Structures are given as structure tokens and as C-alpha cells.
Amino acid sequence: MPPRHFPTPVPQRRSSADDRLLTIPQVIVELGVSRATFYRWRSRRKGPASLRLPNGSIRIRRSDLDAFLADCAETKP
Image 1 (spheres, helix red, strand yellow):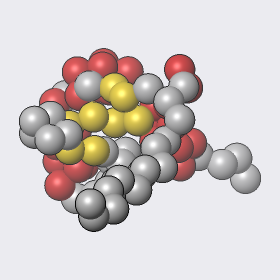
Image 2 (cartoon, rainbow, N blue to C red):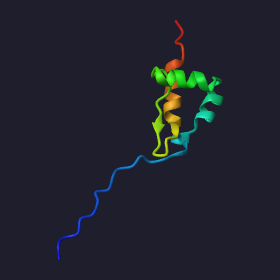
Image 3 (cartoon, one colour):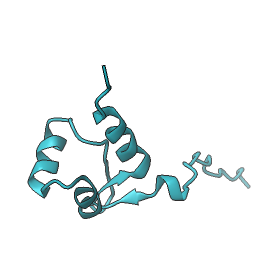
């Protein structure tokens, strides 16, 4: 009998409440921008990093949204 081959486990990100996946409606409400503005930022790669799920839906990690907002913060002179 030939040896059995088992798939190599793929390391997965640990999910935490801090890094949950947000929908576009959740993000645009939090940012206070329109859907069109969000998609314009996304097309210009100016918005928060996003993921495309296998079903075509787009999600934004909470940590990526927080990092985006931190980058947008103005520094005081």
C-alpha cells in the first residue's frame, strides 16, 4: 500500500475581536464618506487595505482600518 499524503497545514491568522472583518457599509459609516468616495479611494489605492473573499465580497480588517486612520492623522508642528 502506498504511503498516504496529508496536506501540509497552512498557518492561519489568529482572529481576534481587534482584527475582525468589516463590511463596506460598516467602514463608510465609520469614516463618514459615501460609497462612491470609498470606491474611488480604493481604485486609487488611497483607502484602507481590503480583501476580496471567494464569493466576491470585499472586507476590511479592523487593524487595516485603524492603520489607515492613523496614517491620515495630521501631526502637530
